[in-house]
Image (tube, rainbow, N blue to C red; front, side):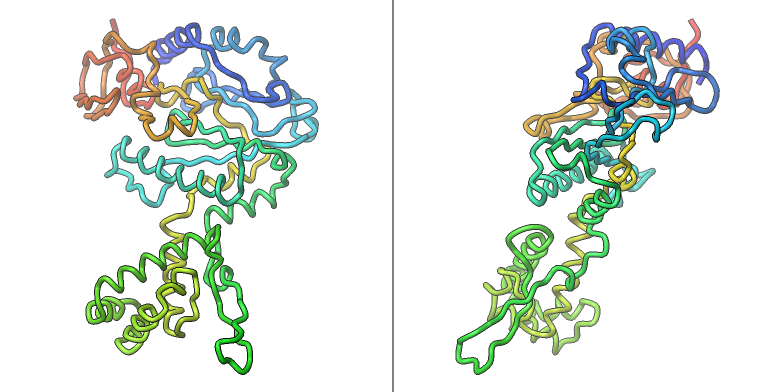
Length: 391
């Protein structure tokens, strides 16, 4: 990035901060603060180990420094401005989750547009929130659009702050479905009566919640699909599964047809051959419904995370705090565009051709010196795709 471009962006970021108010997180004075200035050179330099006492009034700091990126710590400390983590004396941390669009298995880099990547990331966010709200029962959640590639979730419920790294690791493994299989999910129930001389056991999925609920719902849909197909079509379909021959396929169909409600309740012992189907559905459920979070972010009790309300120096978009009610209609490429950059054009020098989807419009920018809406120019310059044109 040329100095001319850097100076322009720094100045316009300052204009944004002069017109904006940034809300601080709870216990702001107990957290470490950091930022990246608009420095020259190929590398970015993080200024960290700062406290609010070091920075002074936050609004004045943002107007004065006009930083490229601003961060605060998930952790809080006795002495947050100390130079080393040991000297800070850790007192606890929020539980933080990070979803990055370009790390999602469903995203194809080079093919998916930025808008498509962010839409897929929102789908992953909904899955994460389902785990946090329904499985863990967390209530104090703060969701933010990161301003760049995805979303952050901050959990501040009582009881999470003292969690050590290994306990946070267990939460990561759960929402990712790491090493989850049928045997780790099922529980045994004793079946008595019904003319049985001796009690017997059956294996069932815990359909009332958690991963068991997710797998059971898929098995229920699978059972409905088989019955709708009819026996011949269902047997042909089942025979296409790995390790399932025609004889096993017919046995599976009959077991499902004769025990449909049991399958819907999570019973996987309706027939020995049905276990292959159940194991396959556990794998498919994990693949489709896990939350592909950035694991080190959640386990790191000292992690620095973007401050909501500030600008992302790699896009010029605003880091937006979102309520659950706002999330459905939130369009990051429209609702996170700062009003400061809307309403006038600037001239930039562009390398390569770029198609932007911002403020509900698609703009194709071709190489050379071009005039574009400022929000598009800021986006291109921040991403390294353009330089500020010489006046």
